[in-house]
Image 1 (tube, rainbow, N blue to C red):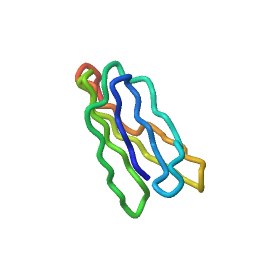
Image 2: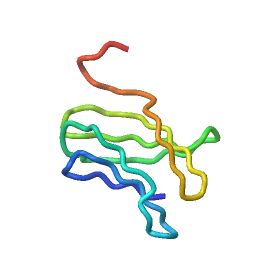
Image 3: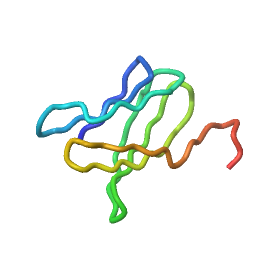
Length: 81
């Protein structure tokens, strides 16, 4: 799977074998400037950084061409955790 950030405030998840878009993550309040993957025994994790100055951690579940993405952590500087 491949992730790409865009100026329109979305992250696109792509199948590297079929070239199909598997999911689009929207709702960023600015361009998505960075994406990074982390694979662990508990699954696939995507970290995003955007020009709205928020780092987010997403858990990605994939079964074939079905992809579910769940926000796990939002590092917004004005939120309390």
